[in-house]
Image (tube, rainbow, N blue to C red; front, side, top):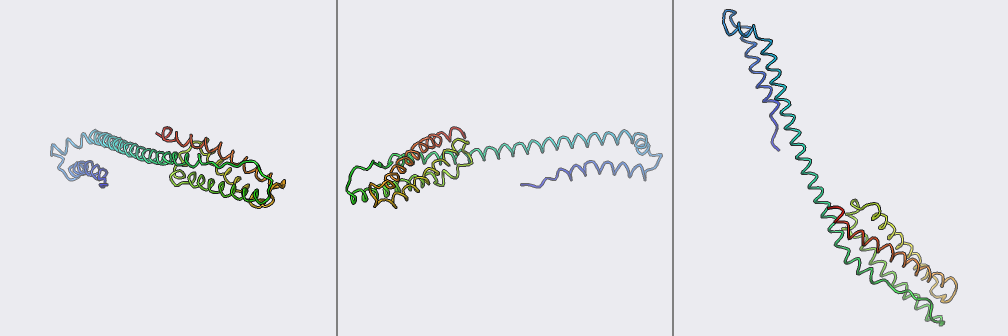
Length: 222
């Protein structure tokens, strides 16, 4: 940025003529018509210079305001461009998030009566649910999505928080099911399996809302 010498220029343009007039009036011969004329009209001349200085100052202030407004508009355009890019990147994760969403694991009711078979089935359910939750959590917290969080409206932010909370609840339910896996048809194992089924549905529902909000993010930002 080039230095602004406007104030110095204004000072010299006004100070030099005033200094010249002052010198003529102070040291000039009273018989000199120029000195006599300046002495007679000094008040008017001083007023004219004051008006000129005021007009020049106002003009410079208007110019400065115009430049500041232009810089502000440019900053707004750059910020908006960055916001749009961030929203587009977040929305690009929707397709991958939908693929992970569609892989929701099936958690059936207890079907058998053989203890060993049911225990193995519980372990398999836990493994599949854990893998699915890991995929979902990885995508929901992807750096492109978290970078766009400041652009989320309150509802989108709420959907994201609820998805993560439901993932945490499901992880807790899976951990409980693992602990009771060997109990097979025991009431505690049955309750743990039901809890996993219920929390998965919660993740499924809220994730759908979040995906739709994320898909619409570029339209809202742009």
